[in-house]
Each structure stands twice: as C-alpha cells, then as structure tokens.
Image (tube, rainbow, N blue to C red):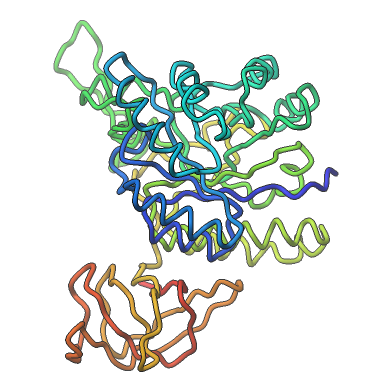
Length: 409
C-alpha cells in the first residue's frame, strides 16, 4: 500500500466553519468568494473575510483554496478578471477552476497561485489530466463517476508531481459531475452558475404523451418515490484503498453545511487517516467509533457510489428527500470570557438546565449541564430562543475555544 499521507480537504460556507475545520484537523479548507463559486446560496466570503481566513489558517499550517469553478459566459469575463486580481492580492494557496477561459485568465493575472482543475471539468482519464498538467495545473479533481481502479490507472500514467484530488464524503449529484440541466429547465436557476435548485431531491410522476394531464404516480409506498435522490457518499470504511489508489487529497463535500457537520466529518476522517497510516489494524479496531461519530451530523443513508463499480438501485433513496438529523447544533465556542464562561452565537433553542455535549478537537466529547445562560447585557435567561444571539454559558465541564456544542434531539 502507498504510504504517502493524503491531504484532508474540508469545506467552509463561512468564517465560523473555516475556524472549526482548521481547529478540528483539516490540512486545507476550500471556500467561495462572493462570485464565481458554484454555491451561490452559501454565505460565501467577502475579500476581507478571505484575508482573515487565510491569516488564521496559515498561522496554523493549513492551506486555503478558493473556488472559481463556474462555466463563464462573455458577460462574466470582466468581473472574473477583477476577481482574479483580488485573489492575487489576497494570496490563497490555490484556485479551483473548471472553465478553460477562466484558467487562461488566472494564468495571466496570478500565475503564482496554483490552479486545481474542478470536478466540473469532467476529468475522467489520464490524457485529460496530462492536458491540464502541461498547461500548468497543479492538481486534478477527478470526476465523481470514476472507480478506484480508474483513479489508480490515472495515478500510474501521470507525473508524480501532478496531484489527484477526489471526493470521499458528502452529497452526490444525479447529473454527470454536477452538470445539471434540470435546475435550469425547471426554475431558471443554473447549476453551473452556482444556483442549483436541487431538483434531484424532488418527487416525480410519469405522464404518457398522448394523455396530457394524466399523471401516473411512481411510488414504492404512500410517501412516493424520489427517483433521482441519491444517498450520500461515505468512504470511511475504505481509507486504505483510497491511499493505495494514489489520491493526494481526500475532499469532503458540503459548502452549504453547518459547523456541526464540519466538526464531525473533520475529526472522524482526521483520526481515520492518521490511524491508518500509523497501523492498519489500529484503523480497523477503531472502525465502530468512526461509523458512530460520522452519523452524528445531518446525513442521508450512505453509499460508496462509483468507487467499486457502477451504483445499483440501492444507491438511491426512494421514499424520502429528507436528511437524518438526530443531533442539533447549539453553537461554536468563540471565546472564554473573563468569568470563565463559554461565549457562543446561538444556532438553535436550548434551556438552562439542559444536558448538552461538548465536541472537543482531540476526538473526545464531554456531556455538560448548562448551569446558566446570560445575554450580552448580563441578564440571566431561562432559555435561548433567538438565533445568532451572543450568549455566555456557565457549563459544568471544561471546554476550549472552537469546541462545538450539540444536543441529542
């Protein structure tokens, strides 16, 4: 088995998620600016926030990659050039790009910044990888439709210095490498401009063309059938195979996800990778912990997608389009105040006296009682009903900055 340590690459929708990802063990974080990333409805980052994020990450030895992976039209080019000039000043470690025109602009404007070729470019074979490598790309993000065998063949046929990045966890797309036509057709929201409406999660019926208006239900039971609704990818049970395939960066999907998701997946994959490289038997011994912890964020049922062959019918979810969510995020601890209390910006309602869980960065958790809640004016409160309110909590257990608070619903 190859023993090169892979990078753990974690998504961030905003500054809080970035700090959690870095604190919980990410080697690199990818995020979007206010333009040109494929998540228009994520919070995304202003240039000022990107600068702060880069400083925070670089002080801790973590890299920052910026998504610029839309498929551009003529009207986008001037704004794209301005965006790239801004990136030149900010100095991220890489740009994630799919459009050849944006690639060319980036090579002209900020040649010192590495370029990673997005999965949106449909990178399915080693000749495609060699093509981008010869143009100056540092890394190729493989198409999600590839098997481990195909990825290994790519690794064997490209230079060692040309890196491979592969999604190993998160939501899957019904369309080929994310090139969705349904969203634009049904809603006018282009998936390739960051506005996907996720029509793959909707419920559908069938209409025969000579009988317009007669909708025939496609259903497994009274709840219907969500025929395009894929299970989520999870490769936590296959870390040795991923390393052996020669993948340089393990990418987690989720730039729309909250801090609880970021904390859970980061610490689980961090521990699994480190355990596997230390001793494969240790990795196997700790498998129950990985599988149990990975379920403690918002998830769908899991699949290994294309890694071991073309997915069958069991890779779809036919009776629901909802997530499984047993735990609720209460907040991230941003500081310890002068009274030793945990300061959070509250995400969901909880009460004084509740037993909650403190998720630590060292792979442990502690249960704690919320002994008291105070608002910004030091008024004691019985409950925390207002999202984003700044609160100070007296907790019965020790905590650290950027620990995450959750409660089992």
